[in-house]
Amino acid sequence: MKLKKPLSSLKEKLRLLIYIIIILTLTIGLTSIGLSQELQRKLDHLINQDVSKIMYALKLSNNSQELQLTTVRLSSFSTNSERTELLNVLVEQWSGLERGLLSLIELETDQAQLAKLNAHLSTIQLAAKQIPLLAQLTENAQEAETQASRLKLNMGLIEKGFSRAVSNELTKLDQKADGYLSQKNYPQLQKSIDEHRELTDFLHLGMQVFRLAAEVDDNADNKTNNQLQREAMRHFLALKQHPSSSKIAAQLKEDWLSQIHPNLIGSSNLFISSRDSVNSGRIANTHLEIQADAAHQIALFSSKLVEQVKKQVDIEGQHLKDDSNSFVWLIFFAGVLYTFFIWLTNWHFISKGIIQPVIATSNAMQAIANEKQNTPLPQADNLELQQMVSSLETLKSYAAQVKSISEIDGLTGAYNRRFFDHKLKHELKSTSKFNQPISIILFDVDNFKLFNDRYGHVIGDQCLKRISYALKTLPEMQDRIFARYGGEEFIVFLTATDNQTASDIAEIMREEVIKLAIPHADSLHNELTTISIGVTTSNSEPGITAETLIHQADIALYQAKASGRNCIVSNLEFKAVNNLR
Image (cartoon, rainbow, N blue to C red; front, side):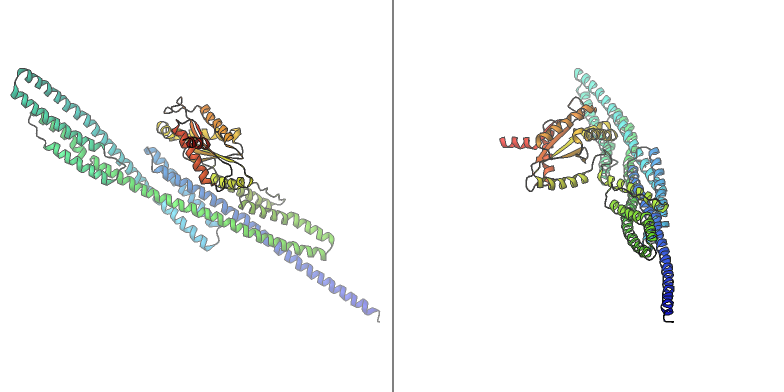
Protein backbone atom coordinates (compact mmCIF):
# COMPACT_ATOMS: atom_id res chain seq x y z
CA MET A 1 0.00 0.00 0.00
CA LYS A 2 2.83 2.37 0.85
CA LEU A 3 4.45 1.61 -2.52
CA LYS A 4 1.30 2.57 -4.53
CA LYS A 5 0.93 6.14 -3.08
CA PRO A 6 4.06 7.49 -4.73
CA LEU A 7 3.03 5.94 -8.00
CA SER A 8 -0.45 7.37 -7.63
CA SER A 9 0.95 10.73 -6.60
CA LEU A 10 3.38 10.71 -9.51
CA LYS A 11 0.54 9.84 -11.82
CA GLU A 12 -1.48 12.79 -10.53
CA LYS A 13 1.49 15.04 -10.88
CA LEU A 14 2.03 13.82 -14.38
CA ARG A 15 -1.66 14.30 -15.13
CA LEU A 16 -1.50 17.78 -13.58
CA LEU A 17 1.64 18.52 -15.55
CA ILE A 18 -0.10 17.41 -18.72
CA TYR A 19 -3.04 19.66 -17.87
CA ILE A 20 -0.68 22.55 -17.22
CA ILE A 21 1.15 21.90 -20.47
CA ILE A 22 -2.15 21.74 -22.34
CA ILE A 23 -3.39 24.97 -20.73
CA LEU A 24 -0.03 26.67 -21.32
CA THR A 25 -0.01 25.44 -24.88
CA LEU A 26 -3.50 26.77 -25.50
CA THR A 27 -2.63 30.06 -23.80
CA ILE A 28 0.55 30.47 -25.76
CA GLY A 29 -1.18 29.40 -28.95
CA LEU A 30 -4.09 31.79 -28.50
CA THR A 31 -1.78 34.59 -27.44
CA SER A 32 0.48 33.92 -30.40
CA ILE A 33 -2.49 33.99 -32.76
CA GLY A 34 -3.69 37.27 -31.24
CA LEU A 35 -0.26 38.90 -31.45
CA SER A 36 0.24 37.63 -34.98
CA GLN A 37 -3.06 39.12 -36.08
CA GLU A 38 -2.18 42.40 -34.36
CA LEU A 39 1.17 42.49 -36.13
CA GLN A 40 -0.57 41.78 -39.42
CA ARG A 41 -3.08 44.54 -38.75
CA LYS A 42 -0.32 47.04 -38.01
CA LEU A 43 1.56 46.00 -41.11
CA ASP A 44 -1.56 46.44 -43.23
CA HIS A 45 -2.15 49.86 -41.68
CA LEU A 46 1.45 50.88 -42.35
CA ILE A 47 1.27 49.72 -45.97
CA ASN A 48 -2.26 50.72 -46.94
CA GLN A 49 -2.57 54.03 -45.10
CA ASP A 50 0.64 55.70 -43.96
CA VAL A 51 2.72 55.06 -47.08
CA SER A 52 -0.27 55.90 -49.30
CA LYS A 53 -0.71 59.16 -47.38
CA ILE A 54 2.88 60.13 -48.11
CA MET A 55 2.46 59.35 -51.81
CA TYR A 56 -0.75 61.38 -52.09
CA ALA A 57 0.68 64.27 -50.04
CA LEU A 58 3.84 64.46 -52.17
CA LYS A 59 1.77 64.43 -55.35
CA LEU A 60 -0.49 67.12 -53.88
CA SER A 61 2.54 69.29 -53.08
CA ASN A 62 3.93 68.93 -56.62
CA ASN A 63 0.55 69.74 -58.19
CA SER A 64 0.19 72.82 -55.96
CA GLN A 65 3.58 74.12 -57.08
CA GLU A 66 2.64 73.57 -60.74
CA LEU A 67 -0.59 75.48 -60.16
CA GLN A 68 1.35 78.41 -58.71
CA LEU A 69 3.49 78.47 -61.86
CA THR A 70 0.33 78.53 -63.99
CA THR A 71 -0.98 81.60 -62.11
CA VAL A 72 2.35 83.34 -62.73
CA ARG A 73 2.10 82.58 -66.45
CA LEU A 74 -1.50 83.85 -66.49
CA SER A 75 -0.34 87.23 -65.21
CA SER A 76 1.84 87.73 -68.31
CA PHE A 77 0.11 85.98 -71.25
CA SER A 78 0.56 87.43 -74.72
CA THR A 79 -2.30 86.03 -76.82
CA ASN A 80 -5.94 85.15 -76.21
CA SER A 81 -5.32 81.52 -77.20
CA GLU A 82 -2.56 81.29 -74.62
CA ARG A 83 -4.88 82.79 -72.00
CA THR A 84 -7.61 80.26 -72.81
CA GLU A 85 -5.14 77.37 -72.71
CA LEU A 86 -3.75 78.48 -69.34
CA LEU A 87 -7.26 78.82 -67.89
CA ASN A 88 -8.10 75.28 -69.03
CA VAL A 89 -4.88 74.03 -67.43
CA LEU A 90 -5.81 75.87 -64.23
CA VAL A 91 -9.21 74.15 -64.16
CA GLU A 92 -7.58 70.73 -64.61
CA GLN A 93 -5.03 71.45 -61.89
CA TRP A 94 -7.68 72.47 -59.37
CA SER A 95 -9.61 69.31 -60.24
CA GLY A 96 -6.46 67.25 -59.69
CA LEU A 97 -5.90 68.88 -56.30
CA GLU A 98 -9.49 68.16 -55.35
CA ARG A 99 -9.12 64.48 -56.27
CA GLY A 100 -5.90 64.25 -54.29
CA LEU A 101 -7.48 65.77 -51.19
CA LEU A 102 -10.47 63.45 -51.45
CA SER A 103 -8.09 60.48 -51.53
CA LEU A 104 -6.37 61.76 -48.38
CA ILE A 105 -9.73 62.29 -46.67
CA GLU A 106 -10.65 58.66 -47.35
CA LEU A 107 -7.44 57.50 -45.64
CA GLU A 108 -7.51 59.92 -42.69
CA THR A 109 -9.00 58.86 -39.35
CA ASP A 110 -7.89 61.72 -37.11
CA GLN A 111 -10.75 64.20 -36.65
CA ALA A 112 -8.53 67.27 -36.30
CA GLN A 113 -6.67 66.36 -39.46
CA LEU A 114 -9.96 65.66 -41.24
CA ALA A 115 -11.15 69.15 -40.34
CA LYS A 116 -8.02 70.67 -41.91
CA LEU A 117 -8.41 68.54 -45.03
CA ASN A 118 -12.06 69.54 -45.40
CA ALA A 119 -11.12 73.21 -44.95
CA HIS A 120 -8.56 72.96 -47.75
CA LEU A 121 -11.10 71.08 -49.87
CA SER A 122 -13.51 74.01 -49.45
CA THR A 123 -10.72 76.38 -50.48
CA ILE A 124 -10.07 74.34 -53.63
CA GLN A 125 -13.76 74.19 -54.54
CA LEU A 126 -14.12 77.95 -53.99
CA ALA A 127 -11.05 78.65 -56.13
CA ALA A 128 -12.39 76.41 -58.91
CA LYS A 129 -15.72 78.29 -58.86
CA GLN A 130 -13.85 81.57 -59.35
CA ILE A 131 -12.25 80.43 -62.61
CA PRO A 132 -15.08 81.88 -64.81
CA LEU A 133 -14.71 85.22 -63.02
CA LEU A 134 -10.96 85.06 -63.51
CA ALA A 135 -11.49 84.31 -67.20
CA GLN A 136 -13.73 87.36 -67.56
CA LEU A 137 -11.27 89.59 -65.66
CA THR A 138 -8.29 88.52 -67.76
CA GLU A 139 -10.35 88.98 -70.93
CA ASN A 140 -11.35 92.50 -69.82
CA ALA A 141 -7.74 93.34 -69.02
CA GLN A 142 -6.59 92.12 -72.43
CA GLU A 143 -9.35 94.05 -74.26
CA ALA A 144 -8.56 97.25 -72.33
CA GLU A 145 -4.86 96.92 -73.06
CA THR A 146 -5.58 96.30 -76.77
CA GLN A 147 -7.88 99.35 -76.94
CA ALA A 148 -5.26 101.58 -75.30
CA SER A 149 -2.56 100.34 -77.67
CA ARG A 150 -4.81 100.94 -80.66
CA LEU A 151 -5.52 104.53 -79.56
CA LYS A 152 -1.83 105.22 -78.96
CA LEU A 153 -1.04 103.90 -82.44
CA ASN A 154 -3.80 106.07 -83.92
CA MET A 155 -2.45 109.15 -82.14
CA GLY A 156 0.99 108.37 -83.53
CA LEU A 157 -0.40 108.26 -87.08
CA ILE A 158 -2.32 111.50 -86.52
CA GLU A 159 0.87 113.12 -85.19
CA LYS A 160 2.78 112.25 -88.36
CA GLY A 161 0.01 113.58 -90.60
CA PHE A 162 -0.40 116.74 -88.50
CA SER A 163 3.31 117.49 -88.53
CA ARG A 164 3.56 116.88 -92.27
CA ALA A 165 0.53 119.05 -93.15
CA VAL A 166 1.57 122.03 -91.00
CA SER A 167 5.19 121.78 -92.16
CA ASN A 168 4.04 121.83 -95.80
CA GLU A 169 1.96 124.95 -95.14
CA LEU A 170 4.91 126.62 -93.40
CA THR A 171 7.07 125.86 -96.43
CA LYS A 172 4.51 127.53 -98.69
CA LEU A 173 4.47 130.61 -96.44
CA ASP A 174 8.28 130.76 -96.59
CA GLN A 175 8.14 130.69 -100.38
CA LYS A 176 5.53 133.49 -100.43
CA ALA A 177 7.64 135.55 -98.04
CA ASP A 178 10.65 135.20 -100.33
CA GLY A 179 8.52 136.43 -103.23
CA TYR A 180 7.19 139.42 -101.28
CA LEU A 181 10.69 140.26 -100.17
CA SER A 182 12.03 140.23 -103.71
CA GLN A 183 9.09 142.40 -104.81
CA LYS A 184 9.60 144.68 -101.77
CA ASN A 185 5.95 144.21 -100.91
CA TYR A 186 6.51 144.81 -97.21
CA PRO A 187 2.86 144.85 -96.05
CA GLN A 188 2.26 141.41 -97.54
CA LEU A 189 5.64 140.25 -96.22
CA GLN A 190 4.65 141.28 -92.68
CA LYS A 191 1.30 139.51 -93.05
CA SER A 192 3.06 136.35 -94.26
CA ILE A 193 5.47 136.50 -91.31
CA ASP A 194 2.55 136.85 -88.87
CA GLU A 195 0.76 133.88 -90.43
CA HIS A 196 4.00 131.89 -90.23
CA ARG A 197 4.35 132.72 -86.52
CA GLU A 198 0.73 131.72 -85.80
CA LEU A 199 1.13 128.44 -87.65
CA THR A 200 4.45 127.71 -85.90
CA ASP A 201 2.82 128.26 -82.50
CA PHE A 202 -0.06 126.02 -83.60
CA LEU A 203 2.44 123.29 -84.58
CA HIS A 204 4.26 123.61 -81.24
CA LEU A 205 1.03 123.32 -79.22
CA GLY A 206 -0.06 120.32 -81.27
CA MET A 207 3.24 118.51 -80.79
CA GLN A 208 2.95 119.09 -77.02
CA VAL A 209 -0.45 117.34 -77.10
CA PHE A 210 1.00 114.41 -79.04
CA ARG A 211 4.02 114.20 -76.73
CA LEU A 212 1.80 113.93 -73.65
CA ALA A 213 -0.37 111.31 -75.34
CA ALA A 214 2.72 109.27 -76.19
CA GLU A 215 3.80 109.31 -72.52
CA VAL A 216 0.66 107.46 -71.44
CA ASP A 217 1.76 104.06 -70.09
CA ASP A 218 -0.54 101.08 -69.51
CA ASN A 219 1.73 99.98 -66.68
CA ALA A 220 1.80 103.35 -64.91
CA ASP A 221 -0.48 104.17 -62.00
CA ASN A 222 -3.69 106.16 -62.44
CA LYS A 223 -2.22 109.22 -60.72
CA THR A 224 0.46 109.57 -63.39
CA ASN A 225 -1.99 109.04 -66.25
CA ASN A 226 -4.46 111.53 -64.72
CA GLN A 227 -1.73 114.15 -64.51
CA LEU A 228 -0.83 113.50 -68.16
CA GLN A 229 -4.52 113.83 -69.11
CA ARG A 230 -4.79 117.23 -67.38
CA GLU A 231 -1.69 118.50 -69.13
CA ALA A 232 -2.88 117.18 -72.49
CA MET A 233 -6.33 118.78 -72.06
CA ARG A 234 -4.73 122.10 -71.14
CA HIS A 235 -2.63 122.06 -74.31
CA PHE A 236 -5.58 120.82 -76.39
CA LEU A 237 -7.75 123.75 -75.19
CA ALA A 238 -4.89 126.13 -75.97
CA LEU A 239 -4.65 124.53 -79.41
CA LYS A 240 -8.41 124.90 -79.88
CA GLN A 241 -8.37 128.58 -78.84
CA HIS A 242 -5.30 129.43 -80.91
CA PRO A 243 -6.10 132.30 -83.33
CA SER A 244 -6.14 131.61 -87.06
CA SER A 245 -6.00 134.77 -89.17
CA SER A 246 -5.89 133.02 -92.53
CA LYS A 247 -8.48 130.79 -94.11
CA ILE A 248 -5.91 128.02 -94.71
CA ALA A 249 -4.78 128.04 -91.07
CA ALA A 250 -8.40 127.95 -89.91
CA GLN A 251 -9.11 124.99 -92.20
CA LEU A 252 -6.00 123.14 -90.91
CA LYS A 253 -7.07 123.79 -87.35
CA GLU A 254 -10.60 122.52 -87.97
CA ASP A 255 -9.43 119.38 -89.81
CA TRP A 256 -6.85 118.23 -87.27
CA LEU A 257 -8.82 119.16 -84.15
CA SER A 258 -11.65 116.99 -85.46
CA GLN A 259 -9.23 114.04 -85.68
CA ILE A 260 -7.55 114.62 -82.30
CA HIS A 261 -10.79 115.27 -80.39
CA PRO A 262 -12.25 111.69 -80.24
CA ASN A 263 -8.89 110.23 -79.18
CA LEU A 264 -8.49 112.65 -76.24
CA ILE A 265 -12.05 113.55 -75.24
CA GLY A 266 -14.27 110.80 -76.69
CA SER A 267 -16.19 108.30 -74.57
CA SER A 268 -13.40 105.74 -74.99
CA ASN A 269 -10.43 108.08 -75.24
CA LEU A 270 -6.79 107.19 -74.71
CA PHE A 271 -6.70 108.12 -71.02
CA ILE A 272 -9.89 106.26 -70.11
CA SER A 273 -8.67 103.17 -71.96
CA SER A 274 -5.30 103.34 -70.18
CA ARG A 275 -6.99 103.63 -66.79
CA ASP A 276 -9.28 100.72 -67.68
CA SER A 277 -6.23 98.68 -68.66
CA VAL A 278 -4.46 99.47 -65.37
CA ASN A 279 -7.54 98.80 -63.23
CA SER A 280 -8.55 95.62 -65.07
CA GLY A 281 -5.02 94.26 -64.91
CA ARG A 282 -4.78 95.09 -61.21
CA ILE A 283 -8.07 93.34 -60.42
CA ALA A 284 -7.11 90.29 -62.49
CA ASN A 285 -3.71 90.10 -60.80
CA THR A 286 -5.37 90.33 -57.39
CA HIS A 287 -7.56 87.32 -58.18
CA LEU A 288 -4.52 85.48 -59.55
CA GLU A 289 -2.69 86.20 -56.30
CA ILE A 290 -5.64 84.77 -54.38
CA GLN A 291 -5.46 81.60 -56.49
CA ALA A 292 -1.68 81.37 -56.04
CA ASP A 293 -1.96 81.93 -52.28
CA ALA A 294 -4.54 79.16 -52.00
CA ALA A 295 -2.24 76.79 -53.87
CA HIS A 296 0.69 77.88 -51.69
CA GLN A 297 -1.25 77.13 -48.52
CA ILE A 298 -2.10 73.67 -49.83
CA ALA A 299 1.56 73.06 -50.72
CA LEU A 300 2.63 74.06 -47.20
CA PHE A 301 -0.03 71.83 -45.70
CA SER A 302 1.09 68.92 -47.90
CA SER A 303 4.73 69.33 -46.85
CA LYS A 304 3.77 69.40 -43.18
CA LEU A 305 1.55 66.37 -43.70
CA VAL A 306 4.46 64.44 -45.22
CA GLU A 307 6.65 65.24 -42.21
CA GLN A 308 3.86 64.33 -39.82
CA VAL A 309 3.19 60.98 -41.51
CA LYS A 310 6.93 60.24 -41.58
CA LYS A 311 7.08 60.71 -37.82
CA GLN A 312 3.99 58.56 -37.45
CA VAL A 313 5.61 55.82 -39.55
CA ASP A 314 8.69 55.96 -37.31
CA ILE A 315 6.57 55.64 -34.18
CA GLU A 316 4.49 52.79 -35.58
CA GLY A 317 7.63 51.08 -36.81
CA GLN A 318 9.10 51.28 -33.32
CA HIS A 319 5.89 49.90 -31.81
CA LEU A 320 5.91 47.15 -34.38
CA LYS A 321 9.49 46.39 -33.48
CA ASP A 322 8.62 46.23 -29.76
CA ASP A 323 5.65 43.96 -30.41
CA SER A 324 7.81 41.77 -32.57
CA ASN A 325 10.36 41.42 -29.78
CA SER A 326 7.62 40.44 -27.34
CA PHE A 327 6.33 37.92 -29.81
CA VAL A 328 9.85 36.50 -30.20
CA TRP A 329 10.22 36.02 -26.45
CA LEU A 330 6.86 34.31 -26.21
CA ILE A 331 7.71 31.90 -29.00
CA PHE A 332 11.07 31.30 -27.37
CA PHE A 333 9.52 30.20 -24.07
CA ALA A 334 6.94 28.13 -25.90
CA GLY A 335 9.72 26.34 -27.73
CA VAL A 336 11.49 25.61 -24.44
CA LEU A 337 8.30 24.09 -22.99
CA TYR A 338 7.68 21.95 -26.04
CA THR A 339 10.81 20.60 -27.56
CA PHE A 340 13.98 22.01 -28.98
CA PHE A 341 12.82 21.06 -32.43
CA ILE A 342 9.46 22.84 -32.08
CA TRP A 343 11.19 25.89 -30.65
CA LEU A 344 13.77 25.87 -33.43
CA THR A 345 11.09 25.46 -36.10
CA ASN A 346 8.88 28.23 -34.76
CA TRP A 347 11.81 30.58 -34.14
CA HIS A 348 13.22 30.01 -37.58
CA PHE A 349 9.83 30.63 -39.23
CA ILE A 350 8.95 33.72 -37.28
CA SER A 351 12.43 35.24 -37.20
CA LYS A 352 13.16 34.72 -40.85
CA GLY A 353 9.62 35.28 -42.10
CA ILE A 354 8.44 38.21 -39.99
CA ILE A 355 10.80 39.65 -37.41
CA GLN A 356 13.94 40.25 -39.43
CA PRO A 357 12.09 41.72 -42.44
CA VAL A 358 10.01 43.94 -40.13
CA ILE A 359 13.10 45.18 -38.28
CA ALA A 360 14.98 45.68 -41.54
CA THR A 361 11.99 47.54 -43.00
CA SER A 362 11.71 49.73 -39.91
CA ASN A 363 15.44 50.50 -40.01
CA ALA A 364 15.19 51.29 -43.73
CA MET A 365 12.28 53.65 -43.03
CA GLN A 366 14.34 55.36 -40.34
CA ALA A 367 17.33 55.69 -42.67
CA ILE A 368 15.19 57.12 -45.48
CA ALA A 369 13.64 59.59 -43.06
CA ASN A 370 17.22 60.65 -42.19
CA GLU A 371 17.92 61.28 -45.93
CA LYS A 372 20.22 58.26 -46.36
CA GLN A 373 19.31 57.61 -49.99
CA ASN A 374 21.74 54.68 -50.46
CA THR A 375 20.00 52.57 -47.85
CA PRO A 376 19.51 48.98 -49.17
CA LEU A 377 15.94 47.72 -48.97
CA PRO A 378 15.23 44.41 -47.21
CA GLN A 379 14.16 41.27 -49.05
CA ALA A 380 10.90 39.60 -47.99
CA ASP A 381 9.57 36.14 -48.82
CA ASN A 382 5.88 36.78 -48.11
CA LEU A 383 3.31 38.88 -49.89
CA GLU A 384 2.46 41.35 -47.11
CA LEU A 385 6.04 42.30 -46.32
CA GLN A 386 6.88 42.41 -50.00
CA GLN A 387 4.05 44.92 -50.49
CA MET A 388 5.51 46.98 -47.68
CA VAL A 389 8.97 46.84 -49.27
CA SER A 390 7.48 47.90 -52.62
CA SER A 391 5.76 50.84 -50.95
CA LEU A 392 9.03 51.62 -49.21
CA GLU A 393 10.75 51.71 -52.61
CA THR A 394 8.19 54.26 -53.76
CA LEU A 395 8.73 56.25 -50.56
CA LYS A 396 12.49 56.14 -51.14
CA SER A 397 12.01 57.40 -54.70
CA TYR A 398 9.81 60.28 -53.55
CA ALA A 399 12.25 61.13 -50.75
CA ALA A 400 15.10 61.19 -53.30
CA GLN A 401 13.03 63.49 -55.53
CA VAL A 402 12.27 65.85 -52.65
CA LYS A 403 15.96 65.90 -51.63
CA SER A 404 17.00 66.51 -55.24
CA ILE A 405 14.50 69.39 -55.57
CA SER A 406 15.93 71.00 -52.42
CA GLU A 407 19.54 70.74 -53.69
CA ILE A 408 19.42 71.04 -57.50
CA ASP A 409 18.71 74.15 -59.55
CA GLY A 410 15.61 73.41 -61.65
CA LEU A 411 16.86 75.17 -64.81
CA THR A 412 20.52 74.20 -65.18
CA GLY A 413 20.77 70.95 -63.21
CA ALA A 414 23.63 72.38 -61.15
CA TYR A 415 23.51 72.53 -57.37
CA ASN A 416 21.60 75.49 -55.94
CA ARG A 417 22.92 78.25 -53.73
CA ARG A 418 21.52 76.82 -50.47
CA PHE A 419 23.31 73.50 -50.99
CA PHE A 420 26.52 75.25 -52.02
CA ASP A 421 26.58 77.49 -48.93
CA HIS A 422 25.97 74.49 -46.68
CA LYS A 423 28.78 72.46 -48.29
CA LEU A 424 31.22 75.39 -48.29
CA LYS A 425 30.78 76.06 -44.56
CA HIS A 426 31.28 72.36 -43.84
CA GLU A 427 34.44 72.19 -45.97
CA LEU A 428 35.89 75.33 -44.36
CA LYS A 429 35.70 73.61 -40.97
CA SER A 430 37.42 70.50 -42.37
CA THR A 431 40.20 72.36 -44.20
CA SER A 432 40.99 74.49 -41.14
CA LYS A 433 41.63 71.31 -39.13
CA PHE A 434 43.97 69.78 -41.75
CA ASN A 435 45.59 73.08 -42.86
CA GLN A 436 44.62 72.60 -46.52
CA PRO A 437 43.95 75.34 -49.08
CA ILE A 438 40.48 75.80 -50.53
CA SER A 439 39.74 77.80 -53.70
CA ILE A 440 36.58 79.32 -55.14
CA ILE A 441 35.85 80.03 -58.80
CA LEU A 442 33.03 82.55 -59.35
CA PHE A 443 31.96 83.43 -62.88
CA ASP A 444 29.06 84.86 -64.81
CA VAL A 445 28.04 85.11 -68.45
CA ASP A 446 29.25 88.35 -70.07
CA ASN A 447 26.55 90.82 -71.16
CA PHE A 448 23.83 88.28 -70.41
CA LYS A 449 21.15 90.96 -70.06
CA LEU A 450 21.88 92.11 -73.61
CA PHE A 451 21.76 88.43 -74.67
CA ASN A 452 18.28 88.05 -73.15
CA ASP A 453 17.09 91.35 -74.65
CA ARG A 454 18.24 90.30 -78.12
CA TYR A 455 17.38 86.60 -78.22
CA GLY A 456 14.70 86.26 -75.56
CA HIS A 457 14.59 84.52 -72.19
CA VAL A 458 13.93 81.06 -73.66
CA ILE A 459 17.18 81.17 -75.65
CA GLY A 460 18.85 82.70 -72.60
CA ASP A 461 17.77 79.73 -70.49
CA GLN A 462 19.11 77.34 -73.16
CA CYS A 463 22.42 79.23 -73.11
CA LEU A 464 22.71 78.80 -69.31
CA LYS A 465 21.85 75.10 -69.63
CA ARG A 466 24.53 74.50 -72.27
CA ILE A 467 27.21 76.34 -70.31
CA SER A 468 26.27 74.58 -67.07
CA TYR A 469 26.29 71.12 -68.66
CA ALA A 470 29.55 71.70 -70.52
CA LEU A 471 31.40 72.91 -67.43
CA LYS A 472 30.06 70.52 -64.82
CA THR A 473 30.94 67.53 -67.05
CA LEU A 474 34.56 68.58 -67.46
CA PRO A 475 37.03 66.01 -66.04
CA GLU A 476 38.38 68.77 -63.80
CA MET A 477 34.89 69.23 -62.32
CA GLN A 478 34.46 65.65 -61.15
CA ASP A 479 33.79 65.43 -57.41
CA ARG A 480 33.55 69.24 -57.29
CA ILE A 481 30.61 71.28 -56.07
CA PHE A 482 29.38 73.22 -59.15
CA ALA A 483 26.39 75.47 -58.34
CA ARG A 484 24.25 78.18 -59.82
CA TYR A 485 24.69 81.13 -57.47
CA GLY A 486 22.06 83.44 -58.94
CA GLY A 487 20.88 84.56 -62.38
CA GLU A 488 23.80 84.03 -64.76
CA GLU A 489 26.33 83.58 -61.93
CA PHE A 490 27.89 80.17 -61.19
CA ILE A 491 30.32 79.16 -58.47
CA VAL A 492 32.67 76.23 -57.78
CA PHE A 493 34.73 75.41 -54.72
CA LEU A 494 37.84 73.26 -54.96
CA THR A 495 39.13 71.53 -51.85
CA ALA A 496 42.87 70.94 -51.38
CA THR A 497 43.53 73.21 -54.40
CA ASP A 498 45.99 76.11 -54.46
CA ASN A 499 45.45 79.36 -56.34
CA GLN A 500 47.55 78.45 -59.38
CA THR A 501 45.73 75.14 -59.92
CA ALA A 502 42.37 76.88 -59.47
CA SER A 503 43.36 79.53 -62.03
CA ASP A 504 44.38 76.78 -64.49
CA ILE A 505 40.99 75.09 -64.05
CA ALA A 506 39.29 78.47 -64.53
CA GLU A 507 41.16 78.93 -67.82
CA ILE A 508 39.96 75.51 -68.99
CA MET A 509 36.39 76.57 -68.14
CA ARG A 510 36.75 79.88 -70.01
CA GLU A 511 38.08 78.11 -73.12
CA GLU A 512 35.35 75.46 -72.90
CA VAL A 513 32.64 78.17 -73.04
CA ILE A 514 34.28 79.68 -76.13
CA LYS A 515 34.34 76.21 -77.74
CA LEU A 516 30.57 76.07 -77.36
CA ALA A 517 30.45 78.92 -79.94
CA ILE A 518 27.16 80.30 -78.66
CA PRO A 519 26.36 83.35 -80.84
CA HIS A 520 26.15 86.69 -79.01
CA ALA A 521 25.86 89.68 -81.35
CA ASP A 522 26.51 92.15 -78.49
CA SER A 523 29.75 90.44 -77.42
CA LEU A 524 33.04 92.22 -78.07
CA HIS A 525 34.82 88.86 -78.43
CA ASN A 526 34.13 87.57 -81.96
CA GLU A 527 30.37 87.86 -81.26
CA LEU A 528 30.53 84.72 -79.11
CA THR A 529 29.26 84.17 -75.59
CA THR A 530 32.07 84.41 -73.02
CA ILE A 531 32.46 84.35 -69.26
CA SER A 532 34.38 86.46 -66.75
CA ILE A 533 35.95 84.60 -63.83
CA GLY A 534 37.12 85.56 -60.36
CA VAL A 535 39.35 83.18 -58.38
CA THR A 536 40.16 83.31 -54.69
CA THR A 537 42.04 80.96 -52.37
CA SER A 538 42.14 80.54 -48.61
CA ASN A 539 45.19 78.88 -47.07
CA SER A 540 43.39 78.01 -43.84
CA GLU A 541 43.61 81.56 -42.49
CA PRO A 542 42.16 81.72 -38.97
CA GLY A 543 38.69 83.18 -38.79
CA ILE A 544 38.01 82.96 -42.55
CA THR A 545 34.29 82.58 -43.28
CA ALA A 546 32.32 81.46 -46.30
CA GLU A 547 30.93 84.98 -46.74
CA THR A 548 34.43 86.49 -46.75
CA LEU A 549 35.71 83.95 -49.26
CA ILE A 550 32.77 84.50 -51.62
CA HIS A 551 33.16 88.27 -51.24
CA GLN A 552 36.83 88.01 -52.27
CA ALA A 553 35.85 85.96 -55.32
CA ASP A 554 33.17 88.54 -56.16
CA ILE A 555 35.76 91.35 -56.02
CA ALA A 556 38.01 89.37 -58.36
CA LEU A 557 35.05 88.80 -60.71
CA TYR A 558 34.34 92.54 -60.70
CA GLN A 559 37.96 93.20 -61.68
CA ALA A 560 37.65 90.65 -64.51
CA LYS A 561 34.61 92.51 -65.85
CA ALA A 562 36.40 95.85 -65.49
CA SER A 563 39.36 94.42 -67.41
CA GLY A 564 37.29 93.85 -70.53
CA ARG A 565 35.50 90.56 -69.70
CA ASN A 566 36.38 87.09 -71.09
CA CYS A 567 39.28 86.88 -68.65
CA ILE A 568 40.32 85.55 -65.26
CA VAL A 569 41.37 87.60 -62.24
CA SER A 570 42.74 86.00 -59.09
CA ASN A 571 42.36 87.78 -55.78
CA LEU A 572 46.07 87.11 -55.17
CA GLU A 573 46.92 89.00 -58.37
CA PHE A 574 44.54 91.79 -57.36
CA LYS A 575 46.16 92.04 -53.91
CA ALA A 576 49.60 92.13 -55.52
CA VAL A 577 48.60 95.04 -57.76
CA ASN A 578 47.17 96.94 -54.80
CA ASN A 579 50.39 96.35 -52.80
CA LEU A 580 52.47 97.75 -55.69
CA ARG A 581 50.28 100.82 -55.70
